[in-house]
Amino acid sequence: MAKQVRQANRSDVRKHEGFLRDGNFRWLWVALALCATSIAAYVMIDAEPRPRGGTMYGYIMGTIGALLIVWLSLFGIRKRVITSGVYSLKAWLSAHVYLGLSLLVIGTLHAGLHFGWNVHTLAYGLMVLVIVSGMFGAYAYAVLPRELSLNRGETTQRQWLETIRSLDAQLREAAQPLDRAEADIVRLSTEQTDISGSLLNRLTGQYPNCSTQRAINELARIHRSTPRGSNASLDQVDALLKRKQETLAQARRNIRIKSLLQIWLYIHVPVTFALLAALTAHIISVFFYW
Ligand code: HEM
Ligand code: HEM
Image (cartoon, rainbow, N blue to C red; front, side):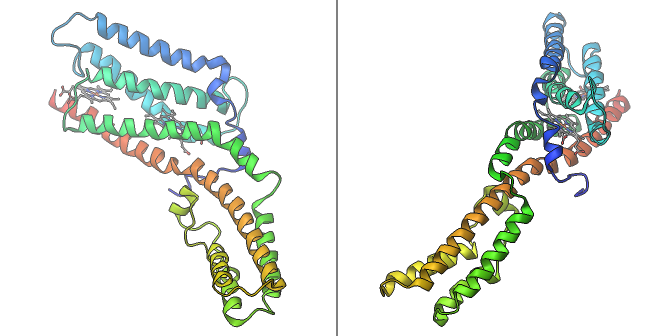
């Protein structure tokens, strides 16, 4: 699974620029036309009971829906083949997004707005889950790459690591003249820097246990409880800790944006497989009981 959800690197993110507007919204219009035709046919069919899964209309809509789902599922393979032009990855993604969204209308009309506690509705629920996670992904690809480049400038992950390493060395040096308790506080930061933290830390961007922040707070507390005028070493340590904290904050913002660009795929891809399984069970079961 981890291999399917790849790293969102710079060129990968660039490939998606402007995918929602690709070909002057060509696929948005195609999807709207598909939805409008399906709704018009549903409304115009004058039959009692209303069209549902087992009617002619239901079979046509079900077949269109199932074919679309299989085609959308193949996107993972298409994504890994490089081509350009009308059928570029961007055009495919644009079609993927708009036709994927149209399934909400197609699937609902196929079922005749009728749901129950059965494998049919399970397939429908999984489809909705894939679509909603896809919406988050489309939003992420449309908005986050800009934030990523604004935050990063020309700095790379490696440069941040080097800066932190160099600040740690300067901190160790500057902490030499400090007393034992103060030096221990500085060691909190230099000996346990966890840049990326847990998944929750990465997604929220909150690092309540950050050892550098704790060191800054502890030093401020000591300073408040025993004021003793200006102390050059302590001031230097404080300034270095704050610089390290700023560097960490910037690196973590970068990690957060990259995590948001990937996390939804952990739902989108596995649920696609579950959907294909439930859909197969749905189709087999309706023919079995027919
Ligand atoms: C070749 C494709 C498909 C065929 C032949 C097919 C067939 C059917 C049939 C015959 C029914 C009526 C079952 C009954 O009344 O007991 C039905 C209902 C339903 N189908 Fe499909 N279907 C297909 C694709 C899909 C797709 C793509 C979805 C959505 C993911 C879906 C979701 C549903 C739902 C939610 C119902 C209604 C269940 C209920 O009334 O409780 N089907 N389908
Ligand atoms: C039932 C419908 C859908 C299915 C089965 C489906 C399936 C997939 C699959 C298998 C991938 C490839 C993931 C990978 O291998 O990394 C993918 C990628 C993607 N899907 Fe969907 N998808 C559906 C609907 C949607 C919708 C409605 C949206 C947006 C509103 C969407 C947005 C995306 C995006 C942005 C990607 C990533 C493209 C990339 O990383 O280059 N999907 N989808």
